Image (cartoon, rainbow, N blue to C red; front, side):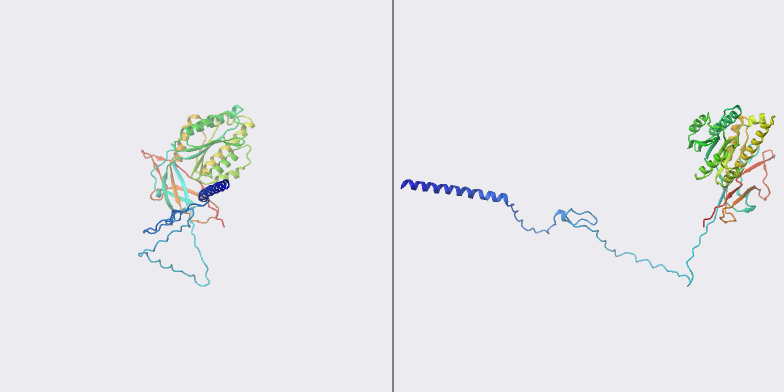
Length: 409
């Protein structure tokens, strides 16, 4: 009996221990599976602030990631705001009349005029607006603007660089190089100059630059030409076309024999191009003058035909210069070059600029002939004297005309 009782008591004790272990483990398991709740805070006496990510931003400022989009706050209308402006009165055309617009386009012509002494090439200063008279197609115009101009130049040195395989052509090539060198030597630091040559075709050796050394180096490189042809008309047409895209007044220093052998452009077309291209003045220097003087009038039909060709070439070079208000030279010796380009510099840099509104205001694209005269205070032809009261002859250098603008319908 006692043995059995002990076993029962021992079994009850084991059951009691197991039950206590289960009860001790249960709260820990529940604590891990269920989040702990935060203790409730006591209500504060101050007003409640919204969380940082939900606070209302300033007007126009960004809000939090989870907040609402902030709109700019409307400014309150000040008490002293000015009253609105009165409505503009509306005008009505008479019944049956339409709307009309008026546009007045008054053309303006600017003419550069050089006044040089024939003997020395010296610029004549001190002239007044009343000393000038300008005529368009024979009708005198009223001068509305007048000033003396002396500014840096923009010039293209256009050189004939054809083959020198024979003794005759060698002199022309040397004259061109000497003239180009003297022109470059008299340039000023503010001047812009470019170099283009031509034989059968044109070639740009140097784009516009203010570096005189670059121009001198380019001239020195003109040693061996490629062709014997002299396409003067094509080259001058291309030069005029390129320069017309540049604003302001430009100059072409043309160093060539004047002969043309293979151009696609005819003489009439190049004359028309030169005449109708504004703001370009040509100064032409014919090469080979010394050799021509030695051989001119020689025996043989071939020499006679050559003389005629060069007389025609001189006439063309002279016409190019005259049409544009430039000058033409035919030097025979290298020693003449400094004086020639000294005269060109005076003619280019020192000028009088006349401005007028033409009496013929039609924009019909016609060519208008120009003529400039110098008069004294009494309206008579102006006479210029030196210190010893000896009369001095002078030359007026200006374009012989211009092409009126063509109105587009």
